[in-house]
Image (spheres, rainbow, N blue to C red):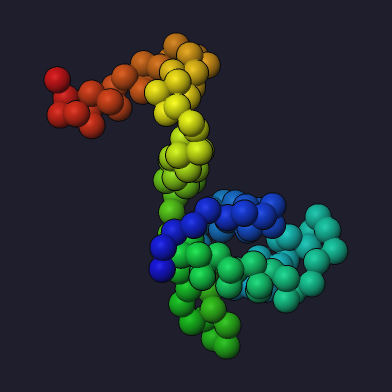
Length: 123
């Protein structure tokens, strides 16, 4: 399965729950966290987890009669994918990158320079 970014607010919330808990979670576990803030059917939590699994964003393993889900990507890996997808939609990639870098605080620009140096062999 290829990794696709979650499109809905609930998908993003479920990923955040999985990251914050740091352990595989069943649909019931996820539902209990989501339902603390809103009225939500158990089947909705289950559907969201299955969608994320179909998109390749979570893995699942048997846990009793249910599956327990865990994220495949870290928050940082997901953010990098999102940045790549947004850049792909820019007409002029160079201009988009320039505007992005200009908007970064100096500390983050330095981190970006370090990452670019490391990616190009450290020169």
